[in-house]
Length: 231
Image 1 (cartoon, rainbow, N blue to C red):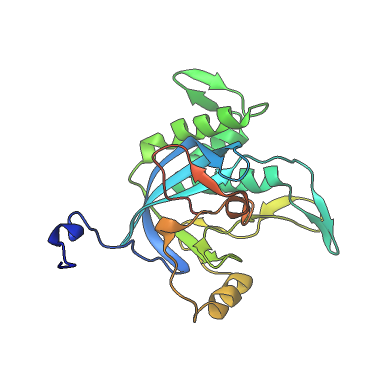
Image 2 (cartoon, rainbow, N blue to C red):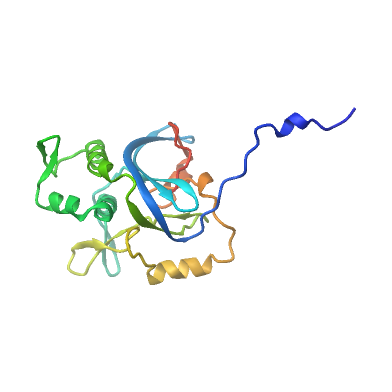
């Protein structure tokens, strides 16, 4: 009996494209609230899903997990930012990349949605993500740059720790991952140089999280249509 069946190739598609670490031109699509599910624990996790259209690649999504701690940790030089601070710096970078006026309105407590004033403090994670989604919706299609760096799991993703605390204890930006005129800092460039001989990253099969490696450790998969889980 013959072993060949021509129908076996019906509907086959080319495998996903590859994104290596680097800085890419992209277009902003959306920010929205999303749910991810852990295959290992069965637990659901709330995320802020950032969706971009990367030049030469297509749709790219990055999930920022809901922070679980607002406490800073100590290091030999001072303090490390809390999970909440890393998340808020990520939010600020996104809005500043699209229109600095959004950030200015946040600073001046002048956020208005549908003609109503919205307080900038005391928001839940869901409320904040939905608010950012509304504020950034008019900028869908805006051109930006994004930065992808090698991760400890071998994949490339948006940097997981964008915030820093200076010697005076003030919150600041350690690395800018979205915006204009982006550059790699010394640490990021060292990681890229070390990963040059590694295989290209298939971002369509990557699952990562805002706390570096969290999604992989939890065996998380999307409960919705999103199957692209970078970061």
